[in-house]
Every structure is written in C-alpha cells, then in structure tokens.
Image (cartoon, rainbow, N blue to C red; front, top):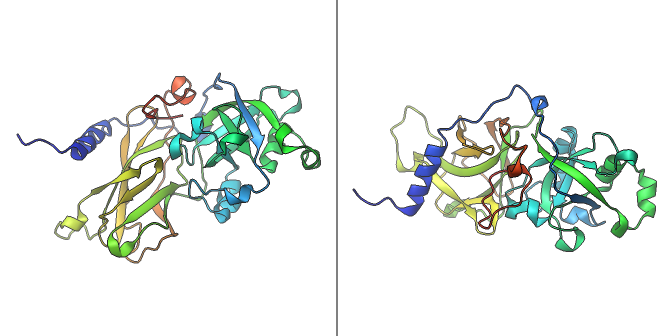
Length: 306
C-alpha cells in the first residue's frame, strides 16, 4: 500500500479523534468546576493599552467596546504561560482576589484578547486588566486607582477557565491583512469562540451547489497554524470564493467537526473583514477541574485546554 504523506496522515488522525463526541450541556450555568490551585496575579494594563488591545488575537476596538462588553466580559492580556503563542485567544476566565475581604465576591469575567508584555507581569501566570476590570475585581473606585502608581496595582488572584457565552454572535472569522485573494493566500483568526473549547484543525473549500458535480475547488483543503502563532490559520492555495469552512473543536478530551452550512466568505472577500460562520460553539470541557485547565503547557506546547 502506498505511504500516506505526513500531513494527510495528521488529518486522518484528527478525523478519527473527531469521532469522539464532546459532552453537551444545557447551558453555561451548569459549569461547576473549582478554582485552580496555582497562584496568579492581576495587574493594570499600561495607559497606552489601546495600542495592544486585540492586536494579538484580531479583536478590534469596535469589537471590544460592544460585543464583549455586552456579553458581560472585560478584556485581558495574559502572560506567556496562559497565551500559549495564541492558542488562548478568545478564552474566558473568571478571576477573584485571594484576599477577598476588600474584593467583589464573584470577581470579574475576562476574555483574552492579547499577550502581555513580559516586563509587566509577575511570574508566568499573570493577567493584565483595564482599569474598569481591575476596579470591578477589587471593589476599588476609579479615583483611588487614578491616584495609585500602576506598578503598585498588582494583586494575588484565583482563576478558573469558564465557558464563553455570546448572546448574538456566532463563531466568526477575521481575514488577516496578510491575505491576498488573487494569489490564493488566506490568513485568518477566529472570533467569538463560545463554550470552553480550543480549535485543533481548520479546512476550507469552495462553497458550491450541493447538487453540482464535485470539483477540485470544492474539495476540503487543510489550513495550517502559523509558525509561532497557533491562533492564526493560513493556506497559500485557497480556492476562488465563495468559501466555506469546517473546524475540529476540542474540550479537553476527544473532538468533533463543525461545518458551516453554506458560504462564509463571499467571492469578493477582503482583508480586514469579519465574517459569520453561522456556527454556535457551546461545548463545555468534561475534565477542566483538574490539571488540564490549570497546568502549564508541556515542552511541545501541546496542552490541549487551559
């Protein structure tokens, strides 16, 4: 039998893994995982945080100001131990002070939109918050924070990863500025990834009439993670649009394929555009109360969910 090329072999493995169906829950309110035992910190983002807001994960200022806030989340940047070269983009966490006498009982919910400058985070497990988020976490008023040096605004926190829930948003893709439609180069990031999942594989194909004869352009083509930025997916041989997508989502164990019902990108898709996949992700991990959601990535960076 002919040898299977390495990349095709990888996708055969993913397809087999996808046969394991993820656990479903009635709603995010059924999530009951405990707090991670590791020590972590929360600090203030620098005054020029607007320059980094969303830069690493593709969330623009208009997105942060509306959709995330409406969903009850503040934004956060995280240290390398959480960011995992971009795999954590869009992940949601609940934070609370370890010394809770002067802090909000339920803490604050945040969504990861960027990586934090290493010089501004204590240790390998830190979050950096906006002033609004920091004030909500600590029950400190804005006037007090305004009088406090940013370097002193660091507190010890507990954290846990929680499901993301967006009322009016499906999983969406933002086409990166590095994309060139005429050359078949497509680079994208995923936004509004609901539930408590990671994306493990992405494929793209031309969206055609289901009754039409199959063609090379309508066959699924894998996209690869950009080296050094696993949250960015790319291909240099995207077919002409319109285009559809399918992804493998994992939640700590197993995985499953999710496929768009029709075209996601129009024939004239443009770099910088945000497009709705029509997919709703609501899966909650079955084993995130243990080390998988609290530990650091292993040497290969392959820790599946955290």
